[in-house]
Amino acid sequence: MISVSQAIVECLEREGVQVVFGYPGAAICPFYDALSQSDIRHILVRTEQNAGHAANGYARMTGKPGVCVVTSGPGATNLITGISTAYMDSIPLVIITGQVSSELLGRDVFQEVDITGAVEPFIKHSYLVKDPSQIGRIFKEAFYIAGTGRPGPVLIDIPVDVQKELIDFSYPKDVSIRSYKPSTKGHVGQIRKAAEVIRKAKRPLICAGGGVFGAKATDELLSFSKKTRLPIVHTMMGIGAVPPDYPLDYGMIGMHGVKPANYAIGHADVLILVGSRVGDRSVPNPDSISSKKTVIHIDIDPAEIGKNVEATIPVVGDVKLILKQLGNEMQEADFGRWIDDLNEVRVTAECDLSDRINAVNPKLFVHKLSEKAAQNSVLVADVGQNQIWAANGFAIKDGRFLTSGGMGTMGYSLPAAMGAKLASPDREVIAICGDGSFQMSFMELATLCQHQIPVKIIVMCNNRLGMVRELQAKQYENNLAAVFLDGSPDFVKLAEAYRIPAMRIDSDGEIDEAIDALLNAEGQFLLEVTVDPLESTL
Image (cartoon, rainbow, N blue to C red; front, side):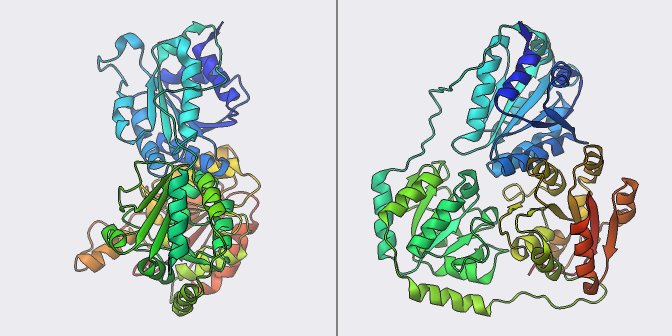
């Protein structure tokens, strides 16, 4: 017989878990005692929210559920933002939370909180473990639910007394959940309808979303586009779905997207949505889309089809399989006039790379960073102006672009980059953030040092909450309220306090040397980039 805590560790080992992110406390100590005697690596974050973000970055790079562990009460509630961030972007996590002793549940004792109830709106599934003998089944189901269908976070809440119970442990080989049977293969009739509509189209267009990565379908997407000669645009979560030099890729759509992509989605007569929920940042007025064009919506989650844009032809199933099925129904097509039209718009699109005075042009900086970074680099963008500059300026070649697209969580980039680097130690991982978002997570510099995680950090510093300032300037008659970051530390000195090399640049002429220093550093490196407070995302 073994304890439930030992059984949990064995469950993780059976699932191939190598790294967990967490923060201990009394209610989860039995598990930590067992974990310390295993070969699983534990990364001690400096605040629980970042355990979720780090597991998020790890999951996105491995394609497997990331694991994070926290204690009860404030440990669990601090993690809520990390859980909701993963839920909105369909990232698979398995979250383990300690809970007060079973006989105390419901009595509002020290550090008790109903975490399963608290996360109900943004969790794929949750368990409160009451029967110790069920721990193997619960963990097997949790990893299966998190990683199949539309991926997402699953929470397991375990009272401290349950963790200490002794059980005869066994781990199931298979999972069978009567109420959970995700569709994978698309309906043949719907796929044939979609193929027929595409063949008759004059201006068809693929819009790729984050679901392409969730389904590991980037190769299938590119093959489908090459065979059919269909142009592609993408949402922010779909950045990197096809190579940046692919001639039929026209960029990111939406309020912060580029002109060719928005022109394409506005003028297409058939729109093929692939793993995209069509949020408001991508399509501010979705009714105008469905009323003017035929919409083919492909998604693993039937609840997303038709939610924001009415689908003419819904196709439920795994994007990877459906693109193969749809490709088999298609022949090479000729949409030459449509492609010529889009290419003309692309030629006239401009990006402001001009020099700035007493500051750095962030668009030029990101452009040069893209040129110098290794092809398989991972860029993890935070939220704010830095996110838009990175999304439109950094060309993802054989790497990945990670960001909080659905929730828009500030402070995401540094801990997510930490997780991404642990998952892909041979890749260059760069976190880019603003001085506002950096101050939400810079305590994780200590985690980087303690665990020797060589992440490179870029802080775009304008002493403002830049995106909010820009919004207030445009929509609130320049009434700037609560956007000034006066009192911020010297970030170079801050990095040096953590024994991390750092430098600051104030002009465009310093960009090349600074990027070289960043990329050539063997360990961590922080680069502060001075940006004009009035710099815009456009």
